[in-house]
Image (cartoon, rainbow, N blue to C red; front, top):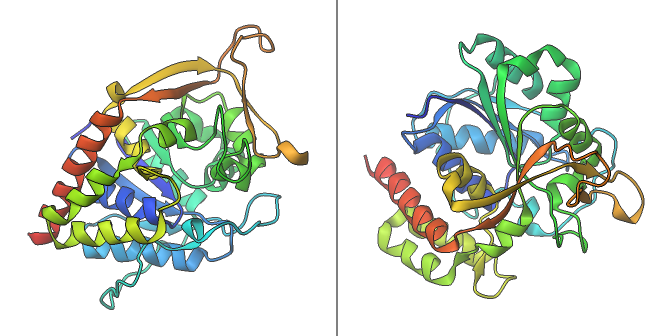
Length: 309
């Protein structure tokens, strides 16, 4: 097990079900808390989804529901890829589970205060819960080892020409996070689009087992917009956590635009011209796609083994 306790904050979606499954089943991950976030008001649905997965894998990990809306920005509906809860047509048993009574930001703070070691926060949805933690509990920073954030883009977006969904959905939260002074790794949209889960990898899932086959069906049903494969999204955050050697990184200062047509755009000071050479993030700029796909299949095999036993 890694000597690094983890809080995982996520939104519902296709990538989320695989990432949550990985967080719950990989023996190297010391998961202490699951929290949920969504921008469309359906936080109860997102939280129940995480509770179902915890019960499904028979894990003793607390779950806290978080922000149902962005800090300021009204919700703007996107495609079904983002709104679907990641469960397709699967019917869970009637688990008798309940979330923690406190909201996600307060649950994060309590977990940080209890932990004898600084914790790593892996955030794969909009950054609203994380921003609320930092704004409401500024004394938490010395308990945080680092932040691994899915989101942001250097070259192209997925909700408009330049903005990534997670930052676009709550840009004010992203500003609070990037101005926090904490160690940040930005797992950018660029690496997601440069290291797809390939068609060959998706076709191999059926050979692993019935649960893996259900993952295959999810990807084939909902994520077929890009030729040659599907974006892994949340799984890249955990790939970076476990295998940073897969990724090429550069240190940049990241600013976030909060209004106008560029709202949600992450601007990297690539030449160090505007912040006197200072940086506030380690940005993933490249990835070994072959190594990532091989790791993805290994992780699904681990999940399948847990499911069987």
